Length: 636
Image (cartoon, rainbow, N blue to C red):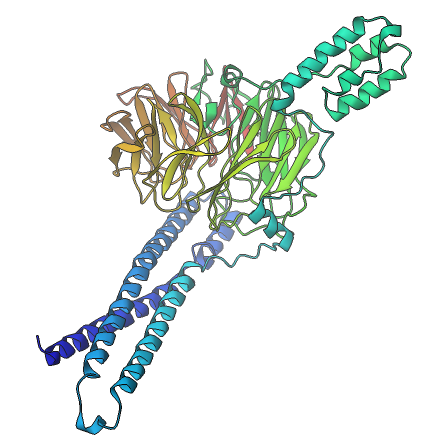
């Protein structure tokens, strides 16, 4: 090919690539304007409909219309984000091809002597060509980057009133702890405390005149115990005082203890399973049949109740207050309500959230001695069962455009927090005793509303998290990532299910994947029915999925073969729970569907709560607890 043909080809390639680049840039601009005008968070039509609903809360048709409009807005947003991601690469590719083609074109034309340009030196011509090419490339790349970043970051405009100290706390994890009681033992000091206890008993048996100044005891106990020992030296009856003041060993619940309770979101280890027996499957809200008690909750919240022995815990919040409630399991009376306030770093104005998330979406966790609660402001607080505040801190205001909803879970001496936001993924373990950061792991993941789940996998207790793009397991002792599989996309809402050594992860617009963590591979996959919020649950070799469009599906957990499906009149935000050989799940209209845990579909009952239900039910022996829009029910 001669130079003239090469020049013509380079010109044509540059022309086509340039036009392509301009068209993609124009589409970017149109998409940016469209996203600006159709903000899924700041939707004026949706706000007007919600206002109408507040005036007419019983309007089921309006409720359905609001949900459908919200779903369409979210789908439009996700589609726009996908277009932006693909368009960014196309725009960059077009700019590169245009630049290379122009370089070739000007390089070839500069070698051809033209009579009218004889007075221009070839070196000068090449230099001018290079300057024009470089300038054009810089302009195109800058336009591409500005278009991409301008479109992707449109949601980062919430007024969260962050102080510089709060920002520093997020980046460096140096979070201020307030209202902390005297130093408490950690799990590592358990043996030391037990040895100190034995030493106290030995000293108590010695004659008073042979009793020393307790120097040996002071070397083995915490500062608080040292102070007590010093006081004992001046007492006239050291034997009696030493016995009365001996330190108590730290007692943490075992897995057997946890099985008897309902301490987390979705029951045992957060897996959607309860070991409670004799669960009721027949009641009537209108007549009060089998309704032991009903308690109105003062503040709104979509979190689920958690239970330890005779106490139930949940939270509520509005724009001015965030509250932890403790309710008597026996009669439903509110025993205490603790305001999560006066926390340094907490925003003066709470972040903007959607109505179906709010500021009290995360479910609390409890170990029987303490209860841990987190709110959409990023405030986390730990309380004793008698309401005494142990510690509180702000983790940084979550950069989540719908609001933070990842629930807490605790095990041994740690409370685990999944903190995946628009700024990146993060999971941390805080000490249950003083809130100090035991470990903090950054994750290669995007924003997620899923909650952490504990599971024994490959002989090791792990923390399993789901987000875009990875589902991963973490060592609970040091936070190291043990395995991961890339299979998720979008803003993940459902938590994982666990069964038969597999991890089940799913999300709308993505996939349903059965993951083998040992092989770090997908065992089987399906995308016919996908949940948006409700989490998968597995037991007895079966897997269950509930969708926001009302379809409930049963699969074979090992093969992915569909066993049965049924369709209801309303979709699901609540997650399915497996208890007493039955499946319990409440739809958004407030009907609790009870089915047999079986490979053949069998309905046991469909019972209306006469009000919407978004929270997941909780169970204790002989009792079922359901949180509705404004109340908590105990069914017995």
